[in-house]
View 1 (cartoon, one colour):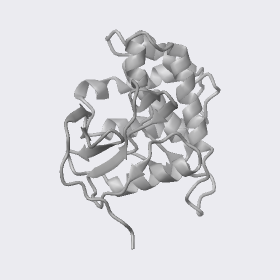
View 2 (cartoon, helix red, strand yellow):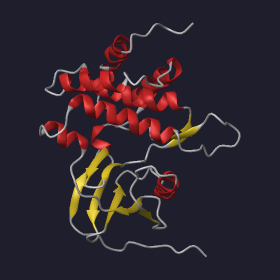
View 3 (cartoon, helix red, strand yellow):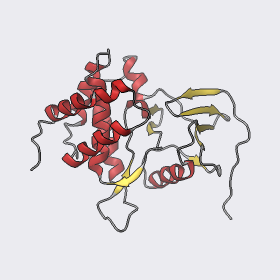
Length: 232
């Protein structure tokens, strides 16, 4: 019988994202609770355990028996985004790190025997989902993960950065340089992956109207930075 850990109480709120909150449990563990009820914590935890088993830097997880609650390793250190905004990380190196993390993830053996090209995809890998711990980077927030072709993962990361790069904010310039570093690897970005990524971002219910408006310019920027020509 599988042992299930049920979380009855939470400690203080440590952080809040678009759809989930993170609470303190103790010095070693935290609880991430989905506010909207659309996630699947059990499936997410299984993916994290799988990639970690293959050497990927994901946090440790514990089962909770809940679709909305995920208990995971408490990490110390800033997110990559915080380090960038505080001037503690180099923008180009951040883009290179994201590229390295995508390549490392897609080197993990796929889980779909029917499609040998399929790999585990994160689908939300950006600077705020990478924590810089004393033991190295850790990739968090696997709520969007699924199996598929790596081009989509590259497309999602590129579109997320490009949306910031084409907006009128202080982060636009750094996001542009990060995007250039991401796609200079060279990347595994594909025409199909970029098309799907833009479509998914447009349909994402957490997107603001402004973020959706930026998608056309974001795609144009990606093509310019990658020096792409449309694939026939």
